Image (cartoon, rainbow, N blue to C red; front, side):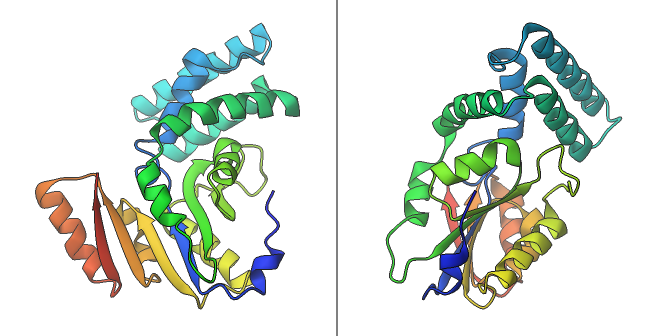
Length: 234
């Protein structure tokens, strides 16, 4: 989707690493996707495929609620159900475009404006997230990101939940291959799951979604990473 070759030899000095859920998106986009599949989406699917997909998503959501499967397994089951209901590329594209319009209503455009502010030389902006590639790769392109590192599509042979250490490893691997690892890293996130990335960042912009003692504890933990910390209250 993205041609990154031009950025590898540019004068870029700054790299933005931006989390999605809870940071740029106000809420959990995967939960929004589940609701979309169950109630509003899949108009491009055949009736039987739509019904089978919704039944599979409801069943996996029940298993998750009861604690029989973890979040990663739930996510992949929903991803696989999506592909089974929408076997044609045009169907997937149509549903993705429709769902992106839903997601755009909860984007923090003030934060996005800050990330996209003009600089010289032009920074590289990377959206790195646990959200599924099925929708977040296209959305990242719409929002102006140069690269999206997401949880791979459900049918991918190298599927992995892009969170925590795995998110750090995949992000840094991409940056090293692209010649960006030594650049000034500015991280935007809202949670301590990104601690590995925090330890490599020069600046940490924490989007405050917690209050009181919990936020104070997060700030104390983040301050140990050695980066300059900025707090964004929502």
